[in-house]
Each structure stands twice: as structure tokens, then as C-alpha cells.
Figure 1 (spheres, rainbow, N blue to C red):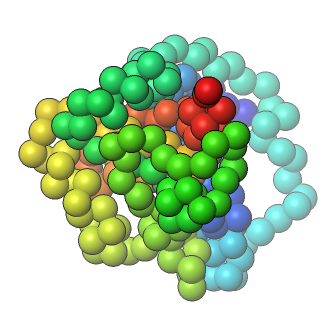
Figure 2 (cartoon, rainbow, N blue to C red):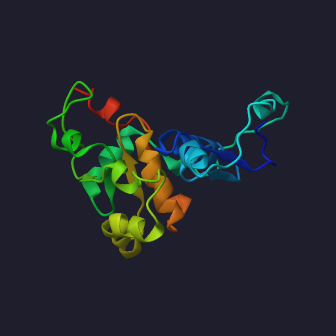
Figure 3 (spheres, rainbow, N blue to C red):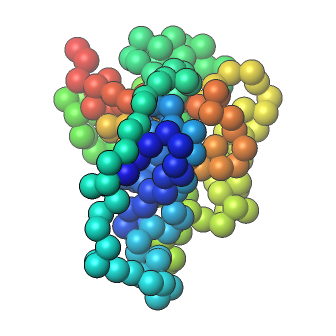
Length: 198
């Protein structure tokens, strides 16, 4: 099972959404060693790696996880987002589709985007042919404007989507490229919350 002293490897189908969400949640709650399987189970199967359904699920084995929030800034609240978007000194990234960013597609009470946000649909970081992330050079190209802003400033990078899930795929990519956890923020309520405000 999950415990503070054991490495946790998380994976999903290969779209990197739910694996990175669990990476973010466990990291936020203080787990010191969470890894994400790039490409997930989809790539694992495509590469004909060993699979099994005979072993007991490790989650059924007893273990203890003691949560502690060591990097509270990993999670942002709406009030902080408002202050962040007003300052506009460091990146505020919208990880939703371009249509949602433009306001032509609505997934909440209102359409549109948070003022000051830049569009970076999380799918632009995913390799559609082999699942998982683009190779490092491709990630750096896709994230170059934001990496330059991070390098130039002392602030943090805040990312949102519809419900705080796709945003973690962008955060993980930035972390993988060397941005410290202390400079990454996930607006957990995301557009689902922000778009419902009157």
C-alpha cells in the first residue's frame, strides 16, 4: 500500500491526466517520492511489457501514510488567483481547450477565461502517436514562453483547467523540466469554480 517510506508509481491510460493528478495530490500531502509512468498502461501494453492479473492488489496490503502539507503553495484558492491575475508578473496558464479559452465552448455557468491567462491546452504536451508526454525537446518548445517568464522572474506559475486535473499535467511537465515545486501552483477549483461566480 501507500506509505511515506515507499516509492509510489502512478499511471493511467496514457493521457497523463489522472496519473499527474494523483502525483500532485500525494505530493501536496507530503509524500516524498511519487513517480509517474510516462505513457501509462497504454504505452506499457503497446511495448508488449509484462502484465498480470494474478497478483493481489498492493492497495489491499496494510500500510500507513501520514499526510503533511509541506508545500502549501501547490494549491491555490480563488482569492489568490484574483491577486495573481491582477499582478500579471508571472504566468497564469489555462490548460483547457482553445475553444474553451476563447469562450466558444462552455463547461460552466459562464464561458471565457480568467483575466491575464495564456492558453496552453494540455493536449499540446501529449504525444498522440505513442501516448505520454512529448520528448523533452518538444516539451521545452511547447513550454518555452512560460519557462522564459519563470527564469526572468521570482514569482510562481499558476495553472488551471476545468476541475484541477488537466492543470496537473502542465504542472508535472514544468516540474520535469526543472521548475521547483515551490514555484508551481494548481488552482484546484479551476474554471468549474471561477466560471460559476456571479
